Length: 242
Image 1 (tube, rainbow, N blue to C red):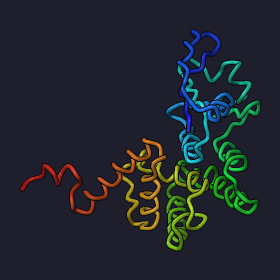
Image 2 (image 1 turned 45 degrees about the vertical axis):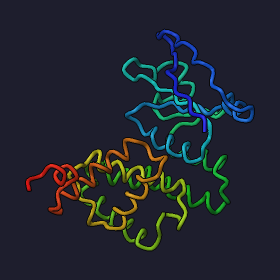
Image 3 (image 1 turned 180 degrees about the vertical axis):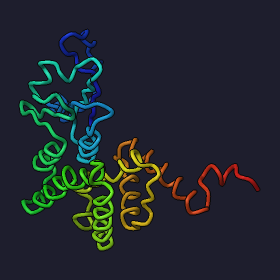
Image 4 (image 1 turned 45 degrees about the horizontal axis):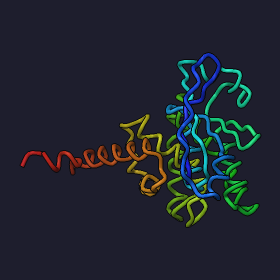
């Protein structure tokens, strides 16, 4: 997969120097010339779309927007997302915004899904971006709804390795990304009591394409879990008292 990383020159900024040519095969070169552009920012949900693009091995270009400079409010970017939010994407001449819409577009065009599989993908993607997101990150709902969501997912995952069965799919990226956000935002939350969710999160974080921030958050969560269970973490085992 060819991934290009650029800074997008918008109005009011200095035009970036063109990147050096990339050596690719003729077949790949055609794809790179028509590469998908994913407009994102390190603090956005763009990692969700990045993860799926990596899983699909679809050539694409990451365009990092500097929000402090207002690049997300430039006329060029507002033509892609009139609301000035990231992530957003262009696939050829087609602009798409909202992480869930991006996932479903990629699943439909590049994921080789059947009609039924696409329906299941839409179910989990919409669930993640609405019901699950609100349960986790809406303070007025978190106290009551987070345990309900985690318990329900735990029951589902007690029966299968992934949400759609034995196969990792886009639905796992949609839901799994929100689960892997939890150690980042709630480091004191003990997820080990949801045994099957906990195991699922570890399987997702172990995937080679899983974004580094999710992997690092999971490593921290595993360390914290070991300390809570009295076994000590990796560092305490290496350097603890004898």
